[in-house]
Image 1 (cartoon, one colour):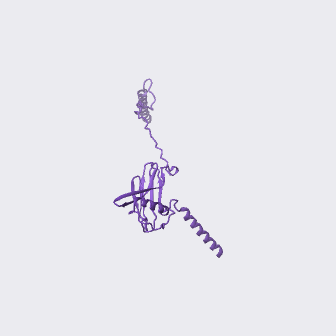
Image 2 (image 1 turned 45 degrees about the vertical axis):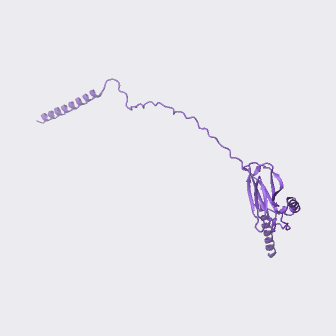
Image 3 (image 1 turned 180 degrees about the vertical axis):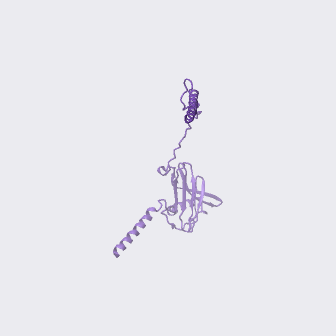
Length: 229
């Protein structure tokens, strides 16, 4: 049981490390603080001598300058520049020129990163590492092309698809149809009256029968009364 528990804990640890490694951003820099040999000051040398020193030390400290180009979906390009030089010497501060503008990158124990946006859809943009100095009253400037030129490339699949626009066409309005409804016809439930009315003859006959009955009854009473005398 104890061995199974130890094996399970080891498997969990390995899986955790693997997951962290997989989740690490792919754009993370592999550079660490760069230890470059101390270079002599060149800003007081003649330009020819300064150029010789730059050519001599460029392969050593040049690896410490990191420039990352990231093309975005809106046609722009993000340029991230970092100076990883650790030594506190003449090469600690580096100057990068991009599209005619200079950016100063501090090195040392707290390297800084400059991020700029250029565009839209730049083509053949070249970054330069710049050195300046003065000798006998004459200023000089040395520009060293850094890396390859960059041209904006459509990121493609990572860009969101444009949402389709739905157009709604309003139906033509028409006047409401007018319906003429005939007024309701009154329906009578009484039977139709035809021929002469029977009400008066019937009433007369009933009255005559009643009178005849009364007269007959009176005569009958009188006759009985006479016979009894």
